[in-house]
Image (cartoon, rainbow, N blue to C red; front, side, top):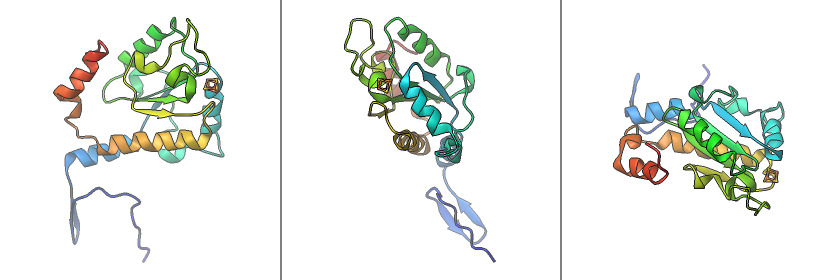
Amino acid sequence: MVDIKPEYKPEGLEGAGYFATSLSKVVGLARANSLWPLPFATSCCGIEFMATMASHYDLARFGSERLSFSPRQADLLMVMGTISKKLGPVLRQVYEQMAEPKWVLSMGACASTGGIFDTYSVLQGIDRIMPVDVYIPGCPPRPEQVLEGILKIQELAKNEDIRRRHSPEYKAMLANYGLE
Ligand code: SF4
């Protein structure tokens, strides 16, 4: 008989023929392994993301192969590339149209800090207009770093309490950005 061991199992009570855990952990497990990314790519980092999606790095291994170009069917906003101040409101509208729970991953120096473009027209980091969960450094980051960033988002999703998004702390954080 083949002894199949799950790669990840949440904490819980186990016995012959049963396994019990909390609802938060089960929901977290499902969310973490079915992330639907919305790639908001404006420049070269987007090309590196394409390499991450392709057969060699194969993002599908992490359950994230279904890219969504519709914000309402996505739960992971991946921002890659230079974001001009003029584009900022568009990016923010995309974020607002996504339903909770949602996560934001900022890929590369430009999205995270403006990168080398310290100019009047470039947003010096997307965290000026929306909360960011994970930053990936580099110019451009390698696909391995993108995978690491996705794994970090999965960790956040897996360990998030299902009541977090209703907590006063979360609402206060959104209020800081003028979001509800
Ligand atoms: S961080 Fe570098 S590679 Fe990425 S968009 Fe900016 S200039 Fe291009």
